Length: 322
Image (cartoon, rainbow, N blue to C red; front, side):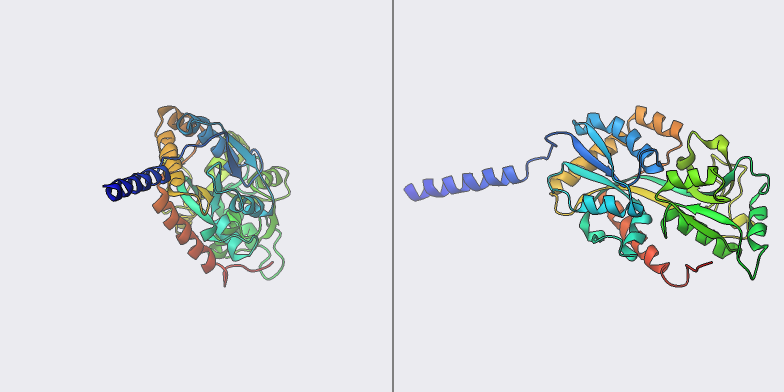
């Protein structure tokens, strides 16, 4: 009888431990959300809109921490090294994140992070200043870039950092159209746009949400998509003009440091899904021109791996100096 009671006690203790280990995660205080770019950047703007509406589903304040520098690598390094307690999460930008790994800008890898969900997926566009009469259309821009064929091009492009997403876009455009340009790299998209507005550069490749609220300051000359975008029906695709024919853009994913529990991933995955389905969030996102594209943790993990393969494919034969 004593043996039976002892065995029952052991089984009860094991059950209790199992229940404790599988207990649902909830953050115990304000959650740090690392954004690896400065305040006012495209990622910062979209992250703050999501955070505002996600707080009621997370149950805690979401504190955006802007950790800029190194084309995103400084913030991603900090995120990878953060405690694995679920109190720190953050955004990674594809393919910038992938390019930073290819270029060994940090000590992290794809495996340094636990995917939670995708937030937005945005199509790249080619823009110039609204008052720049030299470039009424994309052909004029290409012709300008070709004007010094065989010599040094005078066409300048501001980008968001060496081999970051908008630099990839500018290079893909130039490669497909056969012109040359001088790259003027900046620390992020906000500075990239400032460089263009200040006439340090002639054109830029950005994403549509990056110029939300500033549309009057730019002319959109082309989009990186097989078909015209519904919101830009009068803007041609690059493919229409015989240039880059495929989609190109970026995704902004939410991740945690690798090593967090499955409960942490599940909690945030469900919380952000609910936030992105919230009617108030949807209205705010539409007003800001955000292309919300929720993907769950598994699909986001596959996207990150696919973009890593894409970035590695650009390492040879894609880049060249002017």
